[in-house]
Length: 503
Picture: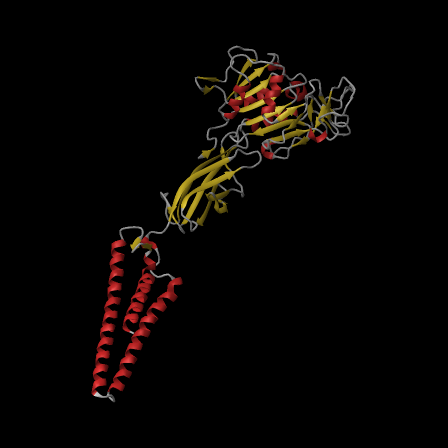
């Protein structure tokens, strides 16, 4: 299985759902930046009865922007279930809200892993890190510069000016490990109703407050959640920014740069990987085999590219790993790189046969995850692929031949000694000795014939079993390299029986 997005990310249609058609002009800078980058926007009012994400089972859009914080019910077939199915199908989503967030928008955000403040009138207040303005105000317009440290998500150019934010805060669901804070509140911030005095400690305070969060789902769908619709407005894009307690004043806030760079990541214009040309083969060969044999030497390679916004560029990293996997990884290696997008390695197939997988699971902050799986069987040695003699059996080989040599020497010595004594015995004794000599000669000839017969059977079985993977001797399946040991064992059995009969 290969999970990746191979198409060009910029060839996309985006549905923009608005509460008020006036948002199209008041947030025109943001929309224009999307269109400039090649995205096709389709604007619809939230109560449009013809609004729909799909037709005849096919999705009409690749992304969805919800600029409708007060909508309690969408028109057409758009509802909570349709939006969640849209994301589950691998499409992208931007959710924005404000102090008047509806229950529907809160429910969508909750399903995505964040929880807005339950107080419907609460806003983020910061008496330390507020934005300096001509009027003192209620410190609900805050200036935040606590960004996530990721060049992939926010680009390589640092956002120098603080982001102006006015809206509600949210907390991350601790059970959801996929949601990340992109813009956080300062330690002195809290969430409360700015028009009333605090009667109890606020529920959201300090670093627990997230202003903007993102989610990258396991299917690589990306979601952005912001508690401030005004953060995207032309007014805050073009406003000057100065953080309370700081002498640095910026002619232009960081809103435009922050939102533009973040939207590039949301719509896969950055941090988007694809894999191609996944190959594996034996060392010295080029064709991919149907299966491997244990202890084979093999090579594995894959090409990984990253979308730069205009074209595919080689992805360069030193932490791509491969697993040779069956129930658990038997081999785990870091792939080498040629600095041109190609990753490769070589290793020896483990001495275990079964069904294995080449497995590359690559998950890094801000990048689309790659899951490359390819199944391959591994077989044991065939009968004629084992070594003819195995080193561990040499003691048994020696024991067999030493027993034969010893018995031969014993027979010669016995016959010579018996002949020497027979010359000094009486004729009757000589006759007995002659009979004994004939018996020993017969036994020796029988042993020799038995040994020759065993060797003959041994070679006959080798020829017969060459047609199969394993060879059968009696009721046992014995590899070719073990036949010598088996014959030696049978030889000892025959010798034992003969010795028992003879003496």
